[in-house]
Length: 370
Image (cartoon, rainbow, N blue to C red; front, side):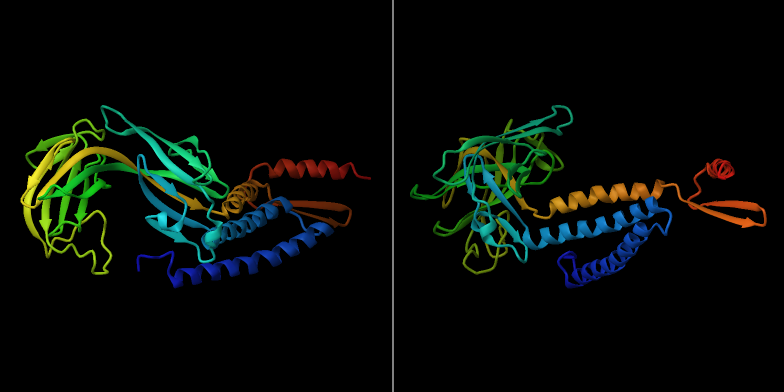
C-alpha cells in the first residue's frame, strides 16, 4: 500500500493518462498546423502556447518514463579510507530500472580520502560538507583527486554521484578470553538527531559463544538527568561509545534478513553494560572490546537518469507555453457592411484592457482604405 509509485494501479493510471494526453494533443496539433498554413484561424499566439504546454508535458512524461525504465539508483555507505568499485555487489541498496542493462554501469573506482564537516558553533547547524575522493576509471588506472559537495556531484556521462548523508563509524577490536581477535574494523552507526547521536550494533559471530553489542555513540558526550547520554555537538569533541553486551545465537545463519544497525535481543542473554572512549578497553566475562578510534562515513547516492534532458527541456518549454497562453492578447473582431455603413465590433477573450483603443485604431485604418 505504501509503495505507491511501484504499484500496478499507479502504473495503469500513468499509462492511461499518457495515452489520453497523446490522443488529445496530437490531432489538435495537426489541425492547428493546417489552420496556420491556410490562415483560416486567428489567435495563433494563444493557441501556440497552449499546444506547446501540452506537448511539453508529453516530453516530460517521456523523460520520466525513460529514466524509470533505463535508469538506476543505488546507495553505498563508505568509511573514510575505504574504496568503492561501481559493481552491483558494492551497493548497500541497488534499484535498477526494469530495462536497465548492468553493462551500462560506468566503470569507476572511488576512494574516500577525507571528509570535512563544518558546523555553526551557536546553532549547531551544518555550514559546509567537503568530501575529498580519489577517482579512476579502473583499479589499475592512476587516480585523480576530486572534490564533492552537496550541490556539486561527480559526473560520469549520464551517471551522477551525490553526497547524501554522513555519520560516524566506531573502529573497534573485540577479543575473547584468550586475547585472540574475533572482530576488528569500523562499524557504521545510524544518526538519530542533528547532533549525530547514533545507534548501531556490533555483531561478533566468531566468538564462542557469539556476542553482540547494542551501541549508542555520541560524538560530544554529555549526560542529562532526563535523557541520559546525549551529544552536545555534531563534531568529535568528546566521543564516547556506550553499549550493552548480549550473548547467544545472533540469528545470522537463520536466512532471515537483519538490519546492520540493530540486534534482535529477544533470544539473547545480557551479560554486561559498559562504555569506552577512544583508546580505552572494556573487559567483560567472555572477553574485551577496545574503541581504537572513530572514522567518518559518507553515504553516496549513484543516480543514472537518461531521460533528465528531455524532462528539463520539457519543463522549459512548458513554462514558455504557459506564459504565452496566459498573457497572449486574445481578440475577436467582427466587421460587417450594412448598406453604406461598416460596423466594427470586438471582444476581449481574456479581459486584457486596451480593446477600445485597438478598435478605434482599426476603424481609423479602415477609413483610410479606398
